[in-house]
Image (cartoon, rainbow over all chains, first blue to last red; front, side):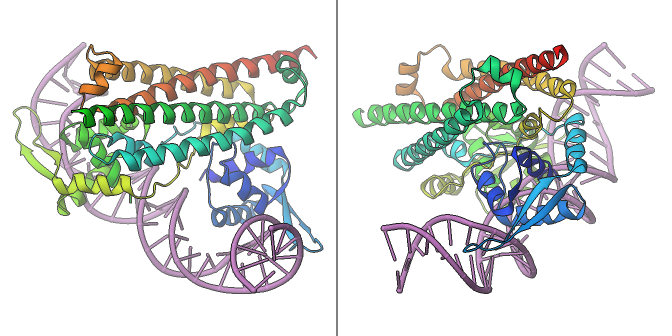
Length: 189
Length: 189
DNA sequence: CGTCACATGTAAAAGGTTACATGATTCG
DNA sequence: CGAATCATGTAACCTTTTACATGTGACG
């Protein structure tokens, strides 16, 4: 039951439709939560029913009608309560790392391909996150930003995403290098 | 259905009882998968039924009898097939980051406490992982290790864990610093 | 003598994924 | 004219968590 808090937290950056939220969640809301559209729509309906978000129907020409959701005071309070209580630890589940753990028993080719794709994906996410960072800072240096902003939270999580993706990219490249080195050593013998 | 692959991958490092595996999974199998004991025991029973692991009953004096599980050829083959196929992307779910996203609306105190605890936990995991790393390398430098080892996989995932925990620790400390800076700025005004 | 580590589970509830469904518009 | 984007869901299934259950021996 804490997809709800992820959704509410995502709305801190301003109102959004279910569809817009699926985009944010597809990228991982700056890499800290993931969820399928179906789950999101269901959760938004529930949150609306409980009064934690309010919805505005926006009729568009040449686009389907959408509902824009925004935090209510009760929704904000739910976030305050959430942050005050205990947090569950992250439960990592990464199939790529499972595959890499098997480096000594599986074909190197498949592994190298997986690592290459993941590195590529990390570079794409990094680009997107760096653009987000620039738009959050909007010309201010970090010191000035911290004193003047009301969006410190999104900046902190964006930085988390940037550091995580950079780290992932480096590890993939490094691991692929060692796997190739081992393959060469095996072929030589 | 890929807890099974995580379990099989964990057994690459040698046979283990269900209980020993719960320990490995509690730390996150070097931070890449997590699972509760109940799920593990159930999965081991299933894997045994399907012939992917074999079990040896070990009667102990002054300890309950345990079952040691080890990979069978079919189990190893399952890992080969797994690595050859498509891998699901990581679906991050981190409550701490959700809470930090709310930095501008929640009490800083609770947030700072959470970040401090997580940083502390990261340092503990780092210690454990560094000891694991030393024992994997056992005196060899990286070049020599890669040429001679049959445990490259565990080394690669161990390094992933080390980098991830170090990264997490730094981010927690840095984020707490900015949150304190913002609090000071708010109190001054 | 209480608590921690060892050792293994069952059952119910909650959470998440997959498959399927619908329909308009824009872009190449 | 086919694919991608916008926009929102239902239903069935699979995975994960939580609560509960049991028993021994070591350690302080």
